[in-house]
Length: 294
Length: 264
Image (cartoon, rainbow over all chains, first blue to last red; front, side):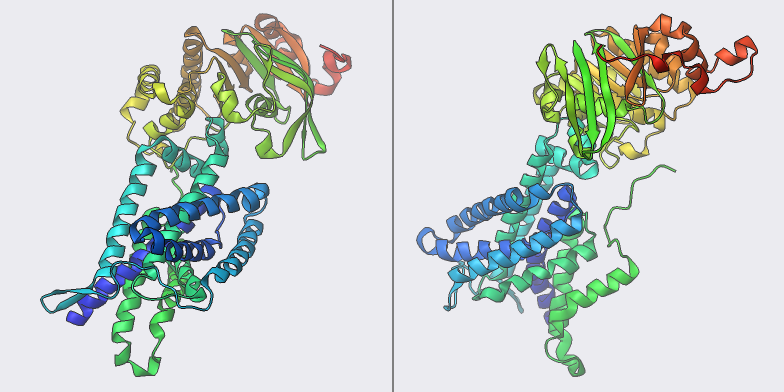
């Protein structure tokens, strides 16, 4: 029972990271109808920025600064590589983002170097003891940070003029243009948001442990998450992220009971989950089916 | 005055869709623009509101001026800010947003006055107020048309371009739409009414244009257009029945076919 609860808590912590990364994918997808494969590189860039800035500035200043800088980097990608391709097939643009991803990771790897780096987060592997339940602080922190960001995003899309414009543009781009919405600004903002979310998500993914250039693989888990949650659903990204995180950690907890599966089956859990979802509900659990009058 | 002079529009660098169209929309007037499918009516509206880009179209000749300032080539947002709003064909409401959110997006360029404009639009369309929290996609066709018009009015346009507002509506609803257009016009907004329903459009317009394969072929005050034989036969479906003659082919009788309009 304790093991189950601990697995769930760990899963929520890990899943929060997935949720943040998946939100970036979904926001860009909704705004531009393109799946951005540059998210892993943006995440890595954000984490490296935090690891370099945390020394002089301290973690709490470094995190927002790095998120901001990553957002600027994402803006640059959007302006330089994606905007000129507006109107081209989404597939072409997706492949471009793939190229951008590789290019950025090569550059970022220079700043990782050969040393073991970490983000100097204040939690490390410390944990709280709640009765017999042991809860790692970093997982709680990741969950709370995600909750905060999700609430902020919700408020942004619900109540602000620009958030509303983004929802409208996601629904019908040309009609939004006709209302005077600047679709270019919507594209830019979506990329900036995705960049900042990736930076924060990556930072929490590596909180308490060290990282190297392979950290970008973590961001790929966002793909099963958005398939599970539905490509165009923000709540789906959040719930999908948490679900995938919990599933992964529960498999990690109990995989020793099924030794024939091997020792690392938890790593592939998200992808197995993705396959299952694709077979049963290809539009995901929360993907909006078209609103249509009958 | 929204003025179009000798406008040429080309899609994809090759398809010449408008060939020297000239048209005036005086402030405060209702002007009808008639024409069959593919005549270029929607393209003209796109040129007026900066939406050609989206469809790979471009103005190659001529000009669109608003109060003597050139507006073609401006971004859609800039044109909306200058007071020209369009209700697109097929309504194009944001189906997944609520009715009120749709209206708020309409007021995107007019952020300071959204509250006042909402009251104004709800005054014009009481049914929208009843359904303000509903998802727009579930409204009936007539309600959606009103939402689309209300959304455009949120920007406080001085010139409102309506692309086939009667499309797919029952006759009773068409009457309602017509009354609303008159009301909008009475409140000081000029209306360019693009229609296939010529009878409805000419009944409220002061002036009318007939567009055919990218050219203005007729350009007369609305009452004279209503009396024009060709318009009666081909847009109102009256001529042949009146005279008892056999139905004539469009091609044989069009008196304006040979009329050249090099300059307007």
